[in-house]
Length: 150
Image (cartoon, rainbow, N blue to C red):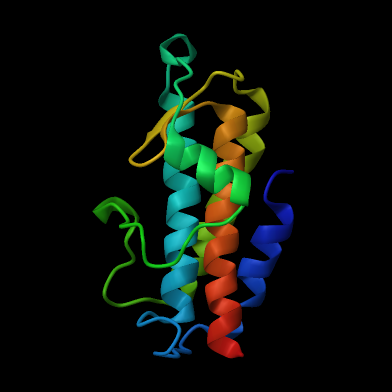
């Protein structure tokens, strides 16, 4: 299953839900977990609703740069409101989102390869490009969580 390792790591950080280290991030580990899970679920829902016939590959310098480096630079992106965590975070919400992500990830097996979603910086991504985005994005936030605990 895609993101299995990353999802396990997200779960492992729940015990440090409230930890913050301002020299790393103004947000708590719980915030990074919630955001990562919201992104995964939001993107998968977009893929499910997409029309594979709408997908057209276009060169995107930002995507090429980030995908080649396998790295998201910190502090450069701005998340859309729909994937921002609420002001009050609860561990139970994280657990519920993890269950939802697991169900959503299983549904990806049956999607056509040109299922797609529009990323604000990377443009239209097909299924394979989306997997890479989700892995990079999740690992970006996992690294921040690791640095908060260091």
